[in-house]
Length: 220
Image 1 (cartoon, helix red, strand yellow):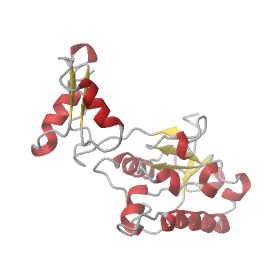
Image 2: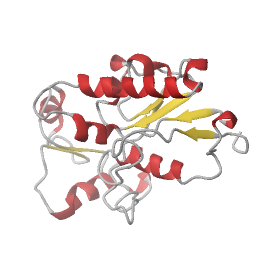
Image 3: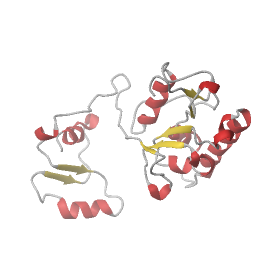
Image 4: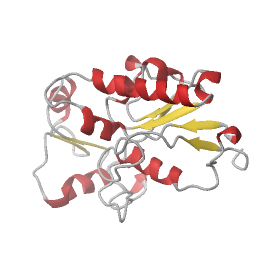
């Protein structure tokens, strides 16, 4: 399969939403996929007639940054934008219509990606960081994409890794803001209760979040 598989990347789409990946931050998984796929020679083809799969190279994070009206609490224009894009490629190329999009895929990491890729795009294979079945994630078709915080474009694996689990002294670690219902309950049940459970609210701010990183790397 690795020797045969060919992917056609649609060249269409307005920048920066298409073809301009973000390579830093918590949504960088989608950006690095765009960068590595568009630079790949083994799996990509410039001839769509030879393709097994069709890639829509959009950034859900840049879609949000570009089109979302701050404090509007409305995502309908983002959803409409992606619907119009599908209408465009379906009218310009024959490939979407022959399978109704089932041999097309997207890779998206922002929390709103399930909403942005619903409607006509639900037939696509969707690799999503937000793998929530309550908002349309389809087990057996869609793919769960790990959300990886990339802090340095020059060294994307900086601060990742750590010792093997058997050499990590902390069983479980959590620190963060107390929004929602679960986090306050988590602290009530576990904060300062067990020596190998490090559960707290937000950590004191230090440069580069090194305290948070080291606690994560020291936890099983």
